[in-house]
Amino acid sequence: MSDDLRLVEAVSDELDKCNRCGFCQTRCPVYRMTGRESSVARGHLARLRAAIRGEIPFDDDIRSSLFECLMCRACTAECPPAIKTDRAVIAARASYVVRGQPLAQRLVFQRVLSRPSLLRAGARALGWLKRTKLLGLAKLGRLLPWLDRGYSEAPSWMPTPKTFLRERLARRDSGQVGRKEVAYFVGCAIDCALPEIGEATMDLLAATGHIPVVADNVCCGLPPYSYGDLESARALARKNIEALEATGADIILTDCASCSSFLREYADLFDEGDPAREAAARVAARVRELTQFLAAVELPTDLRPVRGTITYHDPCHLSRYQGVTQEPRDLLKRIPGVEYRELPEADWCCGGAGSYSLAHYELSMRILERKMENIRATGAEIVVTPCPACIMQLRYGAQKFGVPVEVVHLTEFLGRALPAAAATGRKG
Ligand code: SF4
Ligand code: SF4
Image (cartoon, rainbow, N blue to C red; front, side):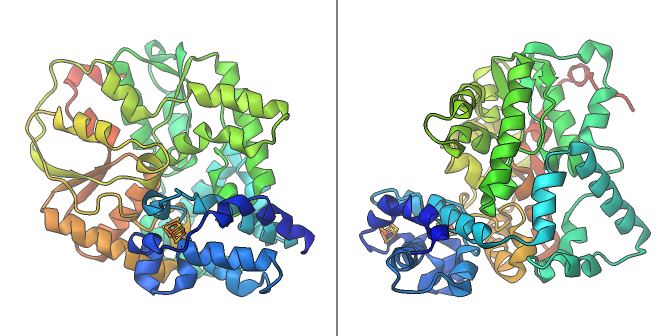
């Protein structure tokens, strides 16, 4: 066995748990689209077992099917021994990273994500390119060999605001300076693409008597982790652990479901005995999922009615990774005037999965189409979800598949019900 396969061998206990029942086939979005055994959890696990034993080569064929996995954990939910196939897939992806990583990918994960100012500069440049139309973004795809033609679609779904969240927060009223008990972790997508969501979150928290201190954090590390770049993920986690400990806050909140799920699993990045593991566990214990936090605090009693038919999409990182499904629905149903309609297959992955649509555009769109048709069937005017990646994907889906629905973050929607005096933090 080659050295790089040792990472896969480390999860061999998990691989061996598979009893080949095939229940995972019923819910795997990728398998439902491709019909290929190599797309589903049972197939991934069998091929990895065979590769460890040297029965098949650990080659590009396995690699491409492993990178098709959405990491949605739908298979785990159906699996009698609850195998976390995503962990095995990550171990295998990490093995490919050991063999080599595209230079551009390494630069982004190691140099850009750890420097929010660079990330914002990149987002600003993309926004300028998009607005001026001087350079088709598709051309840039040639510099990033791990991306496929989905990259040329990126300008359609990636918002490019002129000001970012951290800049907007810096302009808030001095009365809105954070208090120490609650810290707000700024997710990259919220900062650079959807800053209005972060503002809505801060307004909502202020209306509940919580004005968080804004953490000086970097990317949570989930993007490099998802590609198997564990070293970059650990480096980012270390920076965040330090930044979050420095806030001194007892409670850490974020409005990105992916960030909160990854922060809560930080300790798993580090080996037993590594002091970082203990610090990661301390931080993880302070991370509270935002909708659970909001469900437990007092919302203002004088909420305004919000007219409209709404539905709710479960982000994988909230429903399956954190087991949170009821609280967001309960919060929405507390808003006067709302007609709530349950979404069929609400936990079917939207196909966004971070940057999945960049690398697997056709597959992502087929998965998204099923989600959009379910949304259409509800007749809802608004779909609410607490994940920025889902929001961007669903907005793109509404446009692409002609579904007349507005897609908003949970805090944005709840914010519409706040009494006018409650949203006091914004300037201009
Ligand atoms: S994590 Fe999702 S995409 Fe991957 S094998 Fe499981 S169900 Fe399929
Ligand atoms: S459901 Fe679990 S045990 Fe059954 S085949 Fe799929 S991965 Fe294996």
